[in-house]
Image (cartoon, rainbow, N blue to C red; front, side, top):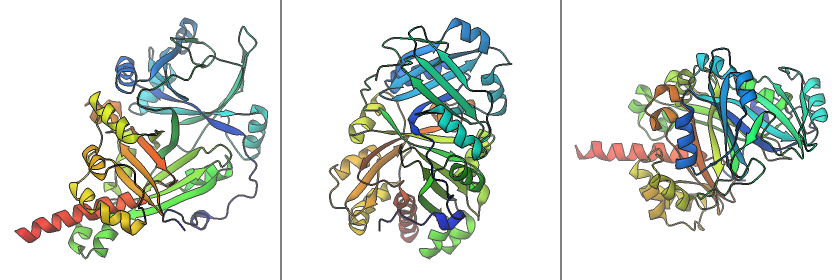
Length: 408
């Protein structure tokens, strides 16, 4: 049994009996709301090498009261909107939150089938389904539902030879129907992670309304690890913890991770701090899958992208930890991983490499840019979410601190 696997069902009740799939094909796009659209354009096109593939046409801009641009890399689509008047959806979102993800869209095979299941399972529709055809006869159908993630909505989209991003959008450059090449290898979403002060309603909703299944779970607290390491004083004075459950749709591979803070020091948890900074539940990060993370990270840094740093002790302990995990086949040079601050986790000769960008508010030195961030991940057989990295990071820092104390 791999170290990341647990029986998630025991944590929140038996799985629902109806496992009929919604017919999800994969991620369609996610919709980001910002105050500074030009700053976002520079970030996506000049830093991340996304291509602008569409923008809202004049009629849609006038009707919606917001300007929108769509950036693409491979199959990834990010729609970024900024308000032009106070009555727009973007303005209402920004009156309640800093910049962040307002909606996630998923491609489905048959919208009628999807809506039937959602209705039977208690899904809350936010309006009538949209059904439009383009001049060539292509058909676009979509419907939006509310979620337990506050002001984040989910949209389900059926495309039948409809090449535009959405009705009212005009193609730019190579157009939405293409798969824009990304120099960094970004081309797909690995997973989406959300935070809330309590995740039970969120996880139950994924199960009962979307029909998703449990995939992975962790419970972690630095205070408990401090006790294990006989550092009781550290455990009593501070700590940060989380519980995380990943739900997935086995048919499409779409995965949602959900985090909640743990006591003690509930309010000190980085999860609680996200909810506070975001003014509510929301999407914490989106993970982009790449095939060569070492090259990707190095090139992104050359373009000015900043990543979260790791304590040096983590890498001093890494060879021993890999041996304990039974990982003998890491192809990447450990010195290169340390230089670039890339994390390693896994087990039984299956591993994954991951790194996290700094939060948007830190990247842009602007609190209104929000606490959202991106993850870059490369999988070499391990499907987990890096539990070992939580523990290893804490233990490495604790050892380094103890070493300093011993020298005094």
